[in-house]
Amino acid sequence: MILINGIPASKELITIFSMVKGATLENPVKTKDLKNATGLSERMIRDGINNLRFTYSVPIGSIRHATNAGYYFIRSETDLIACIAPIRAQAREELNVVNKLKDNLNNWRW
Image 1: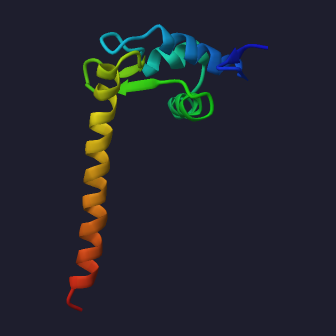
Image 2 (image 1 turned 60 degrees about the vertical axis):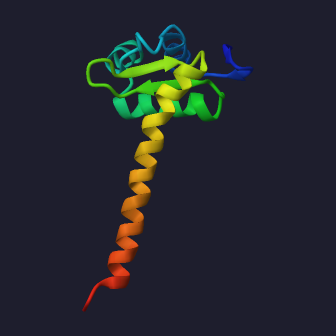
């Protein structure tokens, strides 16, 4: 049995982990390459990445640039910042939507 961070892992998770561990911010592994290597759907790849992040505590970052999108192994503070900055911006925008909807309901004139 193969372990990731001391925890047993499936063959597909091992494959995802191995490919992401070899990837960098400058050269991330693309979802299509993970799909081809594992036979998993895009949704299952995302679930696998989150499983590695939350269950196995693997520092996996993602980059959303259209020309360089993919996953990479976070090795530095710079890698971490590149990953979390867009996530924070998205979270702020989502919170703005929540607050606006609440205001709209409270201020709507029936």
